[in-house]
Image 1 (cartoon, rainbow, N blue to C red):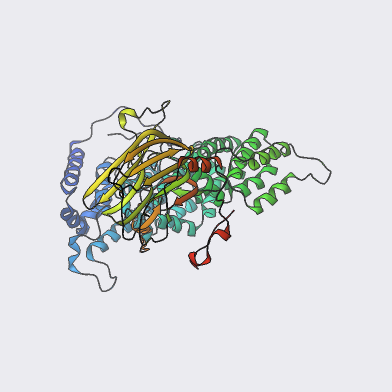
Image 2 (image 1 turned 90 degrees about the horizontal axis):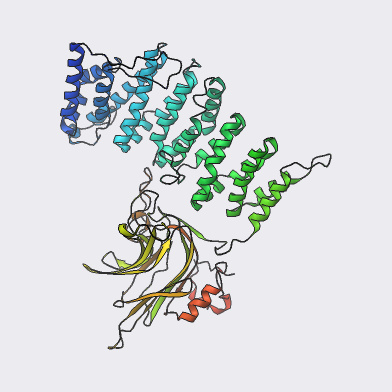
Length: 608
């Protein structure tokens, strides 16, 4: 078995033809493979192997041999993935450390593994460096197999170890490959883990940026230069970046790291960065929001005067225009006018005209979309409605809102469960829920090849579920709609049935009959199911924050503008009038129309 390392330009190319290993070596590899296949999936055997210190040290020693490394690494990965709370811990905790015996063995294994990494780096030979790279890739395999091990790596100081790897490396030829591998390993350690992201933030991204700049200075072969932007994009989205499947920003701190490198990278890399970033912003409103929160507009405005490349200036201004049209602070606006000022001799810079044009576009009202809206991230965003002693009202009720669906699946390439629009519930077995459901697979071509969603209303009464599907209108993503759902109570009239009506953009689309609900008391939520997520429960319980929940399980992912709730079914004329008011109108109510005693002291009423 011969491992060919194409990534090492400095190393001598290995032969492509395979050679037969000596029988003794083949037997050793077969024994390790057999042991790995035996203990895999058997916690008791894995725990027993961990307790055998001699066997663990032997496996770590086999990692040094290139031919034995793949087989030994598989078994080491299995051992590093063992759960620390196994039944084998019943022996009690150590009085000195407070750790259970198995937990102590796991810590010893992790510490021994990082000692091997340090030893491999101190080696000057080519095989030492190959071992170092394989050990780093082994960490990626462990986290990929069991993401919960991210916490263990943080506790044993993995982040400091990786920073020190780049700090103490003396070989300029090895630095680019090592830096690339370290960045990839960091991505695995912070992916979906908020605590690890905060830990890395505490260590400081500025130090990491300085190390990357140092590596770029000695990267004569261009190894890291061709890979840095994709690596940073992977870090930012918590996985392999893909403009269609994985484009949501999950680690906003990487934004400042990426653009903080702009003064120190070559023009080709700057163009690559902006060429990748503009489609990412156009793809998702949440990405614009996160970039604005990180102060990217201010950083780009500071960057413009020092850029001489006209095409690069145009790309920077394009990003400023996209973000400024979404949100812009007073501080950023002041800096923009400072940049537009002429110099001491009265000369104006070449970028002033396109920057003024961009400012005009930022101030232009976008037709068909609200200027102010709620941004639902699809994870933990929801609007809680006041507690209702009795719901619904006697005659009926209506819900109306301007909304925009960001992604049909709740997450690009993710689950296909319905996304909740609003829900009224007393308990999980007694609720009324309205959601969006993806069009059936055979109809996924949709209109002009676009995937659509239908509105669905579900009534839960005990074990009985009544479901209505409004399939006359297909909602497409990234478009604003004015949706109105009315529910008329006709239970007082024996010859009539209660009726649900759907209006889209002021136009009647479909109606259906459904028994009118009646709850003694209920809690209402917009954008999330009251019983789908403990973080959104009415008792205010908090969820664990170490691992980010899966995006899009049932929460609404998109934006909502004006939201109207009425305690009567609106007529077609009323609905058309609300639609004609446009998306920029938030309310035509006046403060004098509401009696003071009806407003809770803790509430804040919003008016035009």
